[in-house]
Image (cartoon, rainbow, N blue to C red):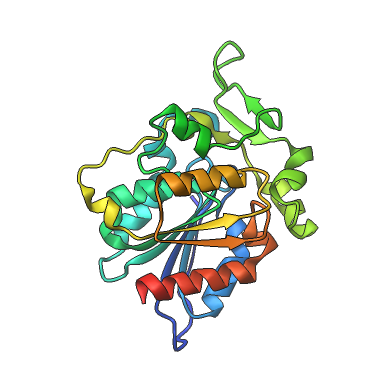
Length: 266
């Protein structure tokens, strides 16, 4: 597992602890601009590869449970002391990991920030959850059958020739080129069967913020707004970006994250 951890500097406002969760197919690498900006602002930052992602060596086709897929995040949160409540940030399918963390480690989370992310209170429990929380794309994906062609697909990935057009249409081309070298297939079964059972109502007490991406071609705006309406967060921000604001608008995203941290973790 690759984990990027930076302690930050002793700046006057160096008091926040950010944990960044990547989305489908990506890894800790996608946050490289935000890691630099947040660290340079004096804050502690951790980004990790979820199981089967980026430098994590597990075969995505072999992952069958969300608990396995999400275990790197759970391991990190389990080791964070209560005195360091975190600003937890999830992008895209990383919103499922964010919700999972709220259910398990809500007492360690100052605020949960969903960036163009799947925001469902209990995961994919209903047909409506599936409609709202998954991309409205099918032909744009390649599907892989790790168990054989006679079985359902075990992983998927946006077709390489369409990635810049769909994921990064407003991002610098060099970032899209880098991503095309690093994206890996996403395990399907853990994502599509991700459900979270509340053992108490404590998870409802964790403040949530949603950051909409207005030019999103993956998790389209109507899906984002439907999830916001179904499980309203405390605050909603908007970025006039593609699905990947960590590439296309890192300074604006950085500013929003600092504002959110001041509001809920200050």
